[in-house]
Amino acid sequence: MAYGVPYFPTGGYNSYGQQYPTSPPMQQSQITTFINVPSQDVAYRWNTPPNTTTNFINENEGCLYKKSVGMSILEPPVFEIYDMVKRTTPQEQQQQEASVTVAPDMSEYMTKTEFESYKTIIDDMQKIVKELNGDG
Image (cartoon, rainbow, N blue to C red; front, side, top):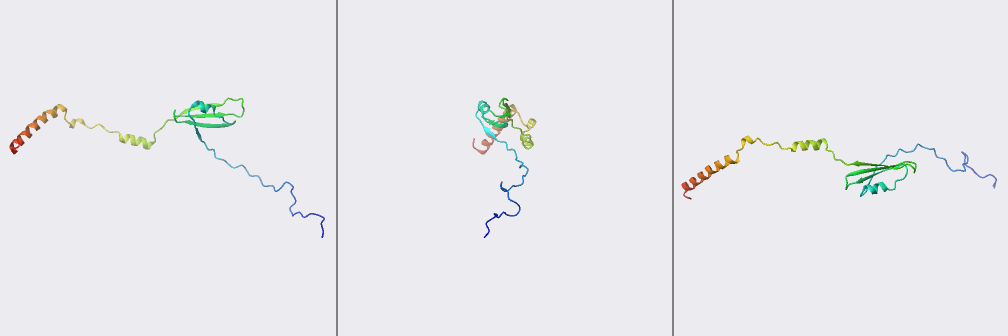
């Protein structure tokens, strides 16, 4: 038996392990999330890491906060406030326009004073009918 040279597979020996080819980094989609906060003060004091932007929502006051922190600790954070405003969609606008009622033409209706005069005539006619039927 020969114990001289250890067996190495063909293709050479790599003492650092197998090297894999490098590929370009994967494109990561940016996901925006909102953190619910009870007040502006809580959003302003929120611990935000360097070089990031954090979005906050305050449903009690109907506003959004955006806090951006730069790379340097010496830069002050940028704090912005936005109001939430609901806008109507074209479909909602059409529904609102369709639901608006048009005032009827009042020329076809009688006034209260005209009604009173007709009411007295109707009452007199009802008395006559009762007398003719023998009810009166």
